[in-house]
Each structure stands twice: as C-alpha cells, then as structure tokens.
Amino acid sequence: MNVVDIMTENPITVQVDRPLRDALLLMETHQIKHLPVLSPNRHLVGILSDRDCRLALNSPFTERAYWQEDVLDTVDVRSVMTPAPIIVEGSDSAIEATRLMLTNQIGCLPVMRGETLIGIVTRTDLLVAFMNMHRYYYDKMAR
Image: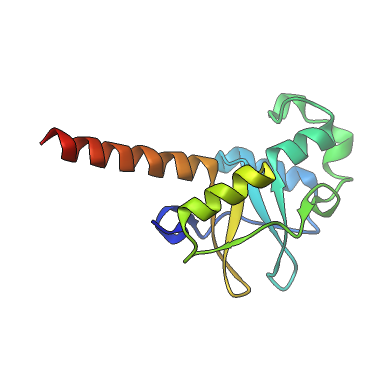
C-alpha cells in the first residue's frame, strides 16, 4: 500500500503570512489538526499543527474559548509553524510514512509530487488503513 492510497487529497492549507486566527478558524471549521503552510507562490514552506497553536497560545486547548485575543491577530503563521517539514511522495510506501512519523515523533506528512503539494497523510489515515487491512484479512480468513 502506498501513501497515495491512504492520503487526504487536496488538503486545506494556509498562507505563511496569515494571522494565527485564520489558521485556527480553518482547523476549527474543517475539524483538522494539521495545515500545510504555503508561500505566496504556493510552495510548501512549513506545517502548522494544533500543538504549534497551543504553544503559541500558551494553553493546553485550541478551542475558541481559550484563544488569547491579543495573540490571534498579531502573530502570523510563519512565526508559529514548523519550517521545512519532512515530506513523502505519493509513491512511497505507507510503511515508510509510518516509520518517518514514528522516528521523528510527528503526526503528519505533506505528500508531494515534485514541488507540488498533492495531499497530506496523518496518523488517523494510517490507523484507518490498518483497520481496513485488518478487517479485510479477518473477513478473508473467516470464509
């Protein structure tokens, strides 16, 4: 199984110069925990996680009730994101993606085709793939 088989295609992204408020609203609206960060010319320059946001807000929560209003519009995504994220290609194996995530203690990997972002693979994607594989083999053995 390759990354392209389990990734989320066309992920929600945020521009590097946007305020943190915009990123948090995107995460909240789409119920996601990771945002690839793009430059004005649409090149991947970073990844913004809910953990990055919690650290910036100095809070264990990312819910709107805990947002520090003074930080939201004065801090931009660039200053909070993780720059130069580890990436994978769609043709890489899911096992390689899992290894990279475990080794580097990260929760997602942007998926690239050359210099173009084509998707994102998360821990959740890998767990769902594992469950589906397990269910397939279990059902096959039960026949």
